[in-house]
Image (cartoon, rainbow, N blue to C red; front, side):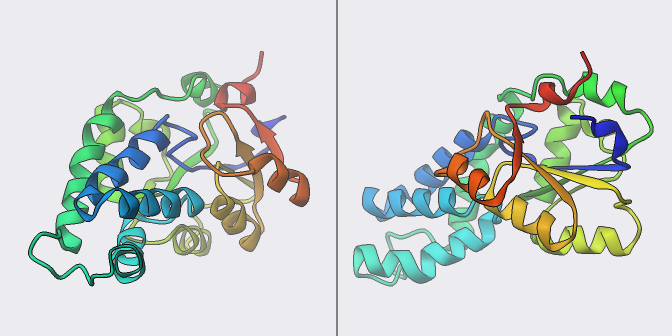
Length: 224
């Protein structure tokens, strides 16, 4: 496909730019293990089913809904980590993985191919963490439109950046989750699904149902 016709490209991070979906899935599992394996697996399942939603919302859901259902307790006991402890454990588990996981093949080539097009990152990941990781991995400069993440939601970020003129149309959102597609559709943006690292269940059926186009990875967007 000819991506050069778009003034703006919007990238999800996990599963699109970085092979980090599995890193974050395992981080959720490890953080929740003090509540027991069944509870940890429920958090993992909730995470996978809600790709693109911030860690803050997922941990809130875990504490408010999952813990009592699985353990029969409210999570306030001495042996259970609280909200801040869970966030800290998750963040600690994620840090190293984000700095060592694979970067999407073809990213540098695609940026060179599109020197005058605006690029943004819109992620469910923590914004401060993302900016530090992208700087450390020397890819921050590719994203001249900014690197954005939680605690703001993807929907709020995209709507805001359209309103302030940072996202210029025509624009393309590249994502690997249902939420990414929903945010793009709600804001009148074109969307392409990136499949190689996705953890979205039944993604092929979803794409067929909604007539969504896909590529395997970023390298498929580069000119040959």
